Image (tube, rainbow, N blue to C red; front, side):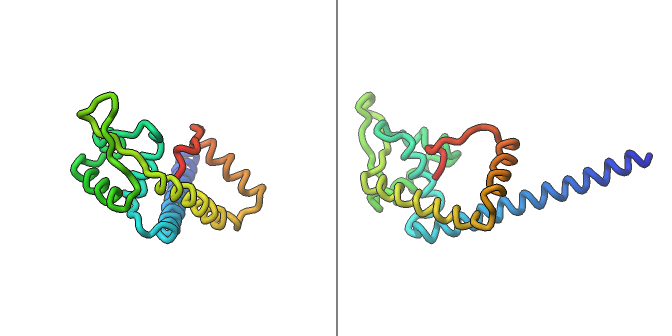
Length: 159
């Protein structure tokens, strides 16, 4: 009986810790998103997300349909976001050479330069947030997060 009560108390304590962890993670992401909007205020979060996804498709481009599928956004909403990005001269619509009925979205060279600068600014912002940790603490944090999320992330997955 006492063993069961101890287990219930331990589970409650663990649940509270997990809740605190989630709250801290969301808080960190809110602060990062706020910093990002200061770095590149002319793009909304959904527009920035599209630019980074389109960037992954480099020279081949991506169709509107595929972009809608990847983002779980309707093609109509994607079209509105795309039109705004075209107006800002960040992406272009090009006819697919393999299928003339298909349109591919590609980044402009100006957008590629902006992404490069954004990544530098974004990394600086993140680095600043983690300056409160020593190198050993940072190593420990990376080790702990790797235990929870062992799948590696590539540079293309990062903003």
